[in-house]
Length: 84
Image 1 (cartoon, one colour):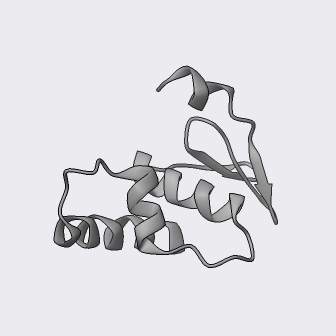
Image 2: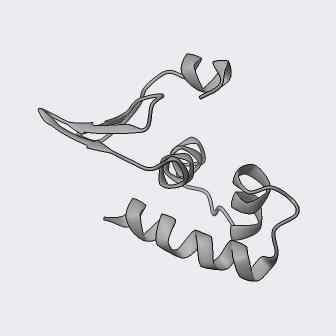
């Protein structure tokens, strides 16, 4: 985890809070998200009410050397995890 990630404040939405480490909390319940689902959720929260395209997610999360097919395959499980 880099210094920028460590300094990010926790993000609150509804009854949930997402901290800098990717831990999602709701009251006493804690869920440790994997890195990519955590990044996707944070981006969506930062852009609440806006449409966020897969291309925007690709540019922010995945290195430019990966193919579109690879990005699509990676995005689906990560975004499914965020939906749950």
